[in-house]
Image (cartoon, rainbow, N blue to C red; front, side, top):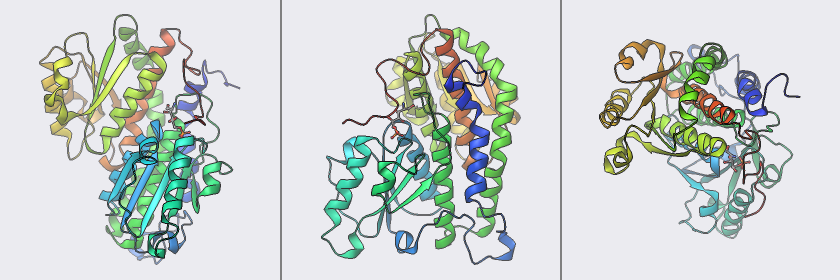
Length: 382
Ligand code: M6R
């Protein structure tokens, strides 16, 4: 069943191009062309007008890796669709009532569809709004991998992420698929609200359509070098720091979570600009720093934050594009190269080398990659 892969996690990392292809095939409207000024949406996610009309606010609840996908989603919903969006841990949201805002879409993100906190957060949101004026009523959307799950049943609509069953406890392909779900939602809402031009929508769709082959390029050209690099961190490394900014800050968080879950190495992630406000005190030559430095609006800022880390003797690993690799070579000790990409779609690529790095560190250490200690695939208890 592992089809020749040593672990399910590795198999699932390699399934990502197919998962992204399948979600594009399912949701992107191939007949849509910006210059024909179409009067229908570029994506077919099937949201009814009562879910999307007059939206003033979006709130997202999730846990763990799904929470990271939600953070990428927040960036897209705000920057592309122009809708103020909040992201909460489901376990916090359910006990921290917020002021009720009218015309709110509430999204639960969960690969299993059975996470107890996420279900409870959505149910409590429905309950507290039910007796209010209709404009306050809950509109619940699930982004999930399981169309038959509890979350799918309690929500009004779902985006089925098309990832297929994931067996490895460390989420990989479901993260990428959930993130794709947010691109589709943001594009649909951006189109309906005319928040960005059709031309820009078209560029983002084009960027997404390149993703499957670009992930294949990473798998084909980087996997061996990343495995080689992983050997440096399997004996004495006790801590890692991940940094990123903007739409790639959640990728730093996800890189750190993957590493701690399966390799048991302590890892923290910070927005790169926060380092000087405290965490930089942790750095010395024993603490590697991984900087997600994708070209775009904050590239120079991330590079200068990374250089500050280097000045404290940290071993610096950069995730960046081939075109920037030479220039970045002066900054980074090691480079995990990803193909050239529009910043807006870059998280889906940047996460892949970090998944592979965590995988190899854990595998070389001889740990149980697919069933890490103390963790379960579905967290169905509070
Ligand atoms: O099934 P869910 O997406 O709701 O699960 C949420 C978290 O428990 C999950 O993402 C967890 O953090 C993973 N083990 C991450 O790899």
